[in-house]
Length: 450
Image 1 (tube, rainbow, N blue to C red):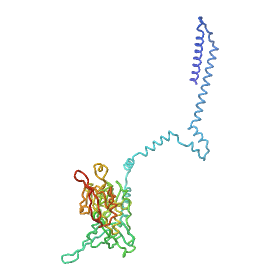
Image 2: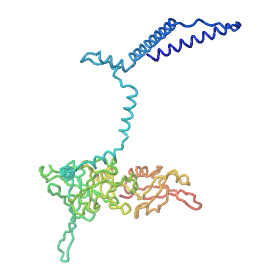
Image 3: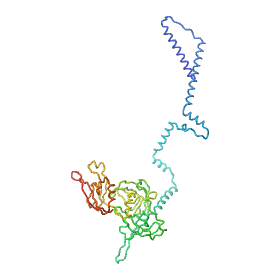
């Protein structure tokens, strides 16, 4: 209030001075000095009263403006409306919206929370958690449950080789291998095992997880994949014995990734009915394979590929089988079951897997820039294969198979899978010659069996 009084008084004083100066200018032509009438106490009182009155008017105007602004502000309006709504009735949604500045702050907070590394959260929780014996037993219990589920599909394959001794007496040599039940229909049970179990066997006997024994016969094997399918006829097996026999559940091996928990069943320790567990350490998405490329998993879980080691995920689903240790990786290579579904189906049908015997990759852009033609660059040729016998060698580029152009190994494999065992096939190959120029060559061969 005093501030506005001061402004009013100052303004009045400046006004009087200006008026006086103006009058002075108008009377410059008068040479004589005119002395104004002296200000009396009465006049001074009037001026002070006028200044106070102006101060009161300006102060009231300012106070009214502040009250009006406060009334019209969004926050105050929302508060008043909230208070006027009777209890139990919903408020107008337009007044419940969060102010923009609060929304921005909330959004920033949520972004910070969402972008916080999951690894840090997990690590903090693990470090701060005080593990008890109950926690340990819970973990072990889960592993045991998976093992019990897997065990229903795991069998022992007794491979019997008969011979004669010095005195023509019969001598039987029995070797034990592992296998898994991959199917059961039409009165028969199909079992996947290793090629070693059938290669020299004169007879086969299967021991199921419930102790039931039954004779088996070989359906078909694949030498280069070290797998075989054998079959048990259900005739003569009681219903009670068959009730505990279950085929494996196939998992999605294509989704398997580094860090996934796995269980090795069969003979990972070199003896049947042994188990091991661990994690996938590395995934090779396009690993070379005869006439194809597959997804290969690498793990430090122990395995014995000769006796049979089969890999299951954390739900007890079948995702692959061990193909042997890789010296470069210092780990076990596991063939993805997803890549072998059609192969196993053909073996179960007694059909040979068409085989040429090359390993290769697509000619990439950098290779094309150096002058290589489009096709399958041969990185290796399997010894004693049809391709090896025909004269195809490392560094050749296969541009066509059976009059069908192929730009990568997947296309080559697709065309080959449609051919029949022991049928003739023609391959067009570009080979680098003198002057680094590529010359097209034709190779004719007979499709083999894998």
